[in-house]
Image (cartoon, rainbow, N blue to C red; front, side):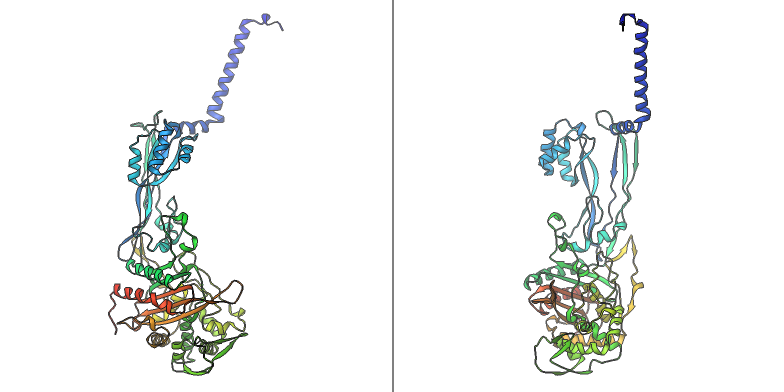
Amino acid sequence: MDHENIPRRTVVAGLLGAGVLAAVGQLLDYQVVNAQTYRDRADERRVSSQTLFAKRGTIYDRNGNVIAQSVECENVYANPKLVEDVDKAAKALVTVLGMDEADAREKLTRDKTFVYLKRQVNEDLATELAGYKLKGIEFEPSIMRVYPYGNLASQILGVVNIDNEGISGLEAQYNDILTGTNGYLVRERARDGSFIAGGAYEKVEAEDGADLVLTLDMDIQQAAEEALAEAVEGAHAVSGSVIVTDPRSGEILACCSCPTYDQTDLANASSSDMNLRVVTDSYEPGSVFKTLVSGMALDLGLVTPDTEFAVPAQIKVGDDMVGDADDRDYGLTMTLREIMRRSSNTGMVMVGEKIGADRFAEYLDTYQITGDSGIDFPGENQGTIRARKDYDGSSLGSMSFGQGIAVAPIRVARAVGSIANGGIMTTPHFVQAKGGERVDWSGDEVRTIGAEAAEQVTSMMVTVVDEGTGEDAQIDGYDVAGKTGTAQRATEEGGYAADIYMSSFLGFAPASDPEALCYVTLDGTPRGSNAACEPFVPIMSKALSVLGVARTR
């Protein structure tokens, strides 16, 4: 083609047309095709949106002591596009916040306008970092959870994550109540990233969460944790648990497991140590269960504490022969009181036979051993409890002395608590009030056995402590009702391990008018039930003192 023959006017018109088409295309791209993308980019440069974090509700013990609260702190963030000196900024982050240098550099050089550098920095460190006057590094107010009593009651309270959401314990159980509603602050920026005075501004205030008042007494809690830790070490146990309740109301005054964990060092905390084993684990209760079996027989009118049994040295349970801890090779005539005092397995099998499998299963339901305890705590272990239709030849006999059944300690404490409370079973609970309103837990109260039967079981439990297997649980000045337990530990292969036991003791005082119940379990110890009596004494003594209970002896 001869270019010289194309009129100049045509060339100019063509170029103008192409320019117009390009402009129209650009306009369509900006205003139609990618309009939202460009608006977002403009907003990123022009508008800054900041979260105003709500405070979680404060948690108090029964005496008004703050045991968990939210405090103000700072989140440190960067706009990498505004960072002028990466070397200086990285060095400051390492020096003040302890960040890894490589991690700091990576965040400071991202192709973004916002990146968190470190969240929940205490205000002293934030102030120190602000003193460096680093371009592109800024701060937003935030909230962090602190526990004024350190790790005391840590398994009960639980922890929150970086977003202040409860992930364990009561922090998780009552997360909806404790969690507030975050607000926000929107401000307009200039090209250099500074805020424009008089520019766009919108603020919605945060709404803080509701407070909780617990039934815990931190003085009793401390005594329980210290005594338990000492007992676990002294008995060479794998672990241990304690729960202290008011059996009249179901209020939990103290509760703990050992080993425990450090709330400020979750990276090195094992999930098992974070568990409140009273709720989350299940065990064969052993001879402590004999209190409940005695209550069944007495309530049915089949026996009295003075009813005599010709108790053999051994008795057949399924395919096995069961004997007593004294390994005697002769029979004895024992009353029910004597069976309890000596903690005779063979005698209690005979009591179970009197009750019969059908009625035994019905009472397990009445004691709610087969159902949830109702405790306001996550992760209750469902245990291993055979339905009546699944009983075999050994079920009734073995369960009569607390073997062949695995249950969370909280359920045993609750059921025996009904004996302490004249036959009325209350619901164990941690929360006394929420959002300023007292919680009524009385609606779930249920009668397990009659008042007379409960009084008779209590009388026999006093005998156990005064002159039986529980003598080591005596407390000067008080009448104590209690029952020991030494359960064998089942193995994964079936059967029971040699010389490894669950040592336990459950007692309440004063026996004549109980105000406190304490259940101690030591798992994986070579020692018998006396190992659990040792921590019971200082824990119950502290509880009676704190509660101001008058001496009864």
